[in-house]
Image (tube, rainbow, N blue to C red; front, side):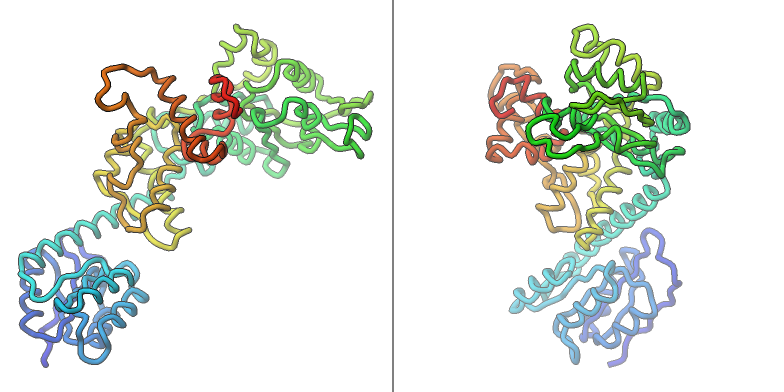
Amino acid sequence: MTTAAVPVFTSSRPEAGNLNLLIVDDERAVREACREVARTLGFNALVAESAEHAFRLLQEHPVDIVLLDLKLPGLAGMEALNRIKQQRRDTEVIVVTGCATVQSAVQAMKNGAYDYVTKPFSMEELRVLLERVDAHLRLKTENRMLRERVKAKQGFAGIIGAAPEMEKLYRMIAKAAQSSHPVLILGESGTGKELVARSIHFSGPLRDKPFIPVDCGSLVPTLIESELFGYVKGAFTGAVQSKDGLLTMAEGGTVFFDEIGEMPVDLQAKLLRAIQEREIRPVGSTRRIPINVRILAATNRDLEQGVSQGTFRRDLYFRLNVLSLRIPALRERRQDIPLLAGYFLDRLSRDAGNDRILSDAALKVLLAYDWPGNVRELENCLERVCALNTGPEIHVGDLPGAVNGNGHSCGPVAGSSKIIPMFELEKQAILNTITQLNGDKLLAARLLGIGKTTLYRKLKEYGSQDC
């Protein structure tokens, strides 16, 4: 059977409204009818009467969509599908099948087909299907372009963001990196305080020296001093040999105190003395050891309020607050949400080996949500969506209820006129999550989009036995 004339194509991807469609069917009448519909929609249409002919065209032209009949002479349609997806991963395939072989079409979708249509089908049905895959491909292209912009706009030292607030932060990081003074990093949970601390260290002259983070909220109070300053053999039961502390191990480098507001007041005095005198005394020792380290600290608390309440030493606060950086909350830089979402989806797609894209409606929901857990919550949200859904496109219904507005955790219980304070809603969300996870607090913190230090502090505030 003679194949219809093939139009001439350039090697570049067609502009909007001119995607390339390859119609593969052994019936000439079907090919011509489908090509006519495709042309009315603005597609450039190629036609082939066999799989072998289709493969030749695929090698010669950039094809966006293949309309593939599963019942072909020679190579079977299912084998042709597998070969197309192996060679052209980004090309979408719509399979055409007879009514008696719908099961084959379902199998084809499992093998990577975008959708299927059964014979006999109307041209209106084909038109709707082509319009849908056209919109899908354009959204896919926009997401890919967004990810390219993300790679070109990494911000500073791997921090994602192009908002004016972030540009200001980058300038402050650059200045802090060239200084040796202590830096106090302020920001809500999940904003990336440790990432900023690492950026300061690895962008400055100490980049080749140790960077040691200390999570003040997770250290056992009775062991914090020995962890920081070290101890000598026999200093306490179990001290069978001497051990260097973190401040000694970081010699010449940087020590980052995360959530410094969680540090007990008595230890704050010893840390202040170590910073001022640049020397420490290991537990159980009478000898002082000189140290040469830079101090960075971060907190999501109001330390000035802590000073007035007596929970944080005034002299240590002023000592740490030589340089101060504030990281904006995600709701204060909503324009960065598409960049961040594109970055996380790109990484998750690489890990899973398949592309994930956000629908326009889903992106609007992400932009409208306040993200109390900030960037960490956004990352966890997309990670959860990708883990629970295998489809290439993320829709509003795929997002967690708290994000898309369908979850009860975002407001009062339906049918109730009682206004529930945010503190109580937060408490219910945290305690219920821990209960559902059988007490796994680390997993609960991750799913809630908050740091483990914040979770433990909240539990203490609630007077929970779980803390």
